[in-house]
Amino acid sequence: MTINIEYETGIPLDLPYEKIIHEVVLAALDYEKCPYEAEVSVVLTDNEGIHQLNRQFRNIDRPTDVLSFPMCEYDRPADFDRLEEDAEDCFNPETGELLLGDIVISVEKVKEQAAAYGHSEARELAFLTAHSMLHLFGYDHMEDDERLVMEKKQEEILKLKGYTR
Image (tube, rainbow, N blue to C red; front, side):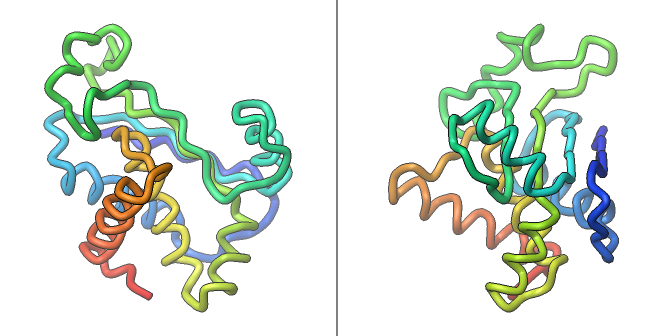
């Protein structure tokens, strides 16, 4: 298992962010019964950094809390069976790990949203990580039924690790 974490902002996040990210990534992989060792990259940035990415990749000209960049396409969310057919696109040839993708989180949004929702920054970071991991597994929330599935899964992953409201 490879989890690359880069802290690209001068804004401090006074909590064990690496531990939280590792716990939630591993919990999400277990929850979805991923049969492979996996590789995930996580970048912690500020509102300006995520704003630029949001504008560049989604044509949305404002900061957001989290962005997900999945490396694999799924026929159905978390359907790992067909990924070996696309082995050269989905697996690291050096390590054999499943390349899930990249997560970018705004530290400023972690702080703002934790205060707005009345829970800890640790819980907010865990939530954004779980949310993004589900996107890396092919889940989405554009339709109400998809949103409900994602919300349930996010809460169950967070509950596994004790990150409750």
